[in-house]
Length: 507
View 1 (cartoon, rainbow, N blue to C red):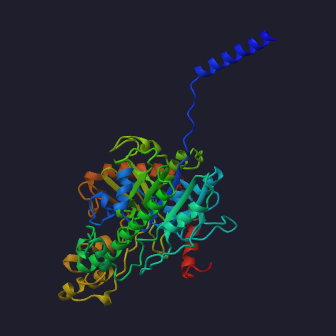
View 2 (view 1 turned 90 degrees about the vertical axis):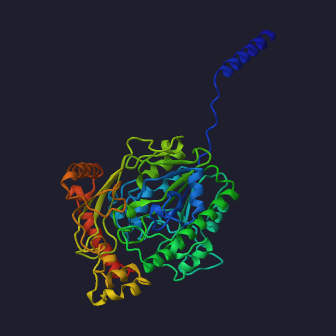
View 3 (view 1 turned 30 degrees about the vertical axis):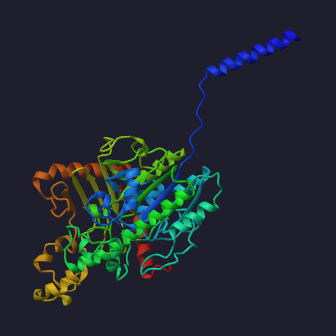
């Protein structure tokens, strides 16, 4: 009896010794929460962190300082629904069939982040503007692709043309309701600074210590008092959206969630201006982008790698430890996020591509185009060549009245009333004339992209290189514009045009 007990003791001692010699594996880190904060119609330079704008956007700046500021963040399309679809699916917009169009649908065949994350144990919701505008696929999705809607809580104080949905309060409601043991995905779809704007927004800027004179006008537009005031009405909503970001940060802090939340702050496409939104120049597709994740991402870094919206879904899935579906064409930037380096980090991220198929025009007008941008040059191919804007000659005024007009006229009114005035005429080819088949800009020498070099013999090799690079990507990702398989695009174009004729209320 004693010998058997002694043998048992010796075996236990040996097991204890062997076990002690094996390194214990650390418990896996808690899966991160994911929060997308997406503004509507805002180019990258509108945020003060980039050094051009005088607008105070301290909460965006906080995210950049406590995380990473991306200087080359690009949407996939300068139009809401396709850009949002790219973010949710990790695919270039032209890969998404009907999802390549605003006012159509995002087919169920393409997995979206909230569904993938819910399958892995996450709670998922959104507030404000989710994916869209569009319709749910017939016999397809039963909810918005951004997740379950949290829209009930409204602001106690209402302002002209500001969405009365209280984004932060709805986030708080979601966090209170969700199971405590579940990590979360949440999408805050801010509708600001999308127009229309409040008539007195330019006066309300005083709330931020600003006047109309503090608001800059980009160099591809006439800089007149009327245009500046129009910009000031927009600028107030940029500041307002930043205030809402501050409230969202407070909610995360109050719930003790900020430390382990991967927060991505960006915009769906560029500012609603000619040569910006619905256009493939930089102001249309280059968007603000900052990310923070205090638990894992080293702070105070400025990264110059090109990042496309298609890269965000695989990044989020990798961060959450969820397998990335094979069909996603974007590439995770998690190694860049968790690096301690600044500047250019991944040598392969030296360029980006984007495009557009449709944004409200009727045949024969077509906004369809593709672009590629590297560190210096920007190449665009336009598939339609109709005028960008039709100016009504009956509204033209003598240029002796220019100063009076310029004092208050909006941009479109200024172009119609004084297209021949020297302060306006040089912008007509950029804003109103037909798009050329090809465009090429030297962004180092011409940051406002005013001089098209596509026909310049000294730049022919550069244009050929970028065109080949773009077409190689298009072939690899089966862009119908390069494969010629245009049936779905043509059918969807007719569908969305008919929806527009019906006021988007019927089929």
